[in-house]
Structures are given as structure tokens and as C-alpha cells.
Length: 182
Image (cartoon, rainbow, N blue to C red; front, side, top):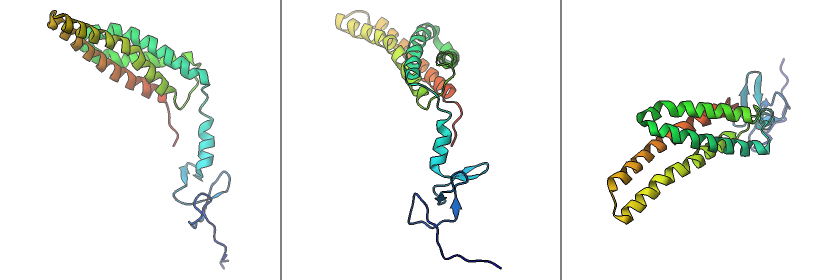
């Protein structure tokens, strides 16, 4: 014997959608579009966001620390690595990993959603002076009428710097990003 109820339940986020699902944490009615699959059932987006906020432990100054540390170490590593020619392909990801570990320890192993972006910004800012120097040499040598071979050689060395920044920043980003819960 089945009992039918004439009362319809509608999604809390989409009042025009009829549903029979409920969040397994708070019991709020949710539609299929709002439901997030978890190992124990379906949850509403609000409960999932509350769960994710537990893992974000970074403080406001951790972003500053990450940017400053990555800028300093990136400038130092970039000055050394870009002088080694094609070895930049092997050493740049290693430098990114080392910088990520130093940042992770400097912020006392706290994690934040935007911490990798602050660190990547620091890598780019740390490499800017290294990239600007060959361009300044090129401009002055072209206006002075000097040997352009030397200036174009220094410009070519800045290509190694671009390769370094891209590879180092991508490694740094993915090392700091960690586990995503979605």
C-alpha cells in the first residue's frame, strides 16, 4: 500500500523546479542542477562551500609573504638559470618546485584559494628586472649606432627568461594549488 501526497517540493534555489532530492546535511530541497555528489549522497552548494572553507586557512599576510618570497627567489633563480642556455627546460620546473616548498613553509603550511596566484605574480614581478635589462641595452645600442649583434644577443637571452618564467610559474602554481574539492 502506497501513500501519495499531493504536496510538491520545490528547489530552494530554483523555485520553479519540482524536486524530490534533499541535501543530506541540512535537509534543504535541491534540484538536480544544484545537487553536488558526495560519497555519502547529495549536498546543496551552500553546504559544499562551508566544507571547503574549512580547508582555506591562509591569513591576509600570507599572500604578501608568498608574493615577496617568490619575487626574491624567482629573480635569484632566473638570473642563474637563464645563463645556462637550454638547461632552462630542466631547471625551471625544479626552481618552481623549490620556490613552492619555501613559500609553503614560509606561510606555515596554510592554504588559500588565491595563494598560488599571489606566488605566480611574485614570480613574474621578480623576473621583470631581468627582462627589462636586455631591452634597455637593445634600445641604447640601437640609438647609439653601436654593434647591434650584441644587443640582439642580449634580446635572445631574454627569450630564455620567458621560458623560465612560464615553466617556473606553472610548476609553482600547480604545486601550491593542492587538492581541489569540487
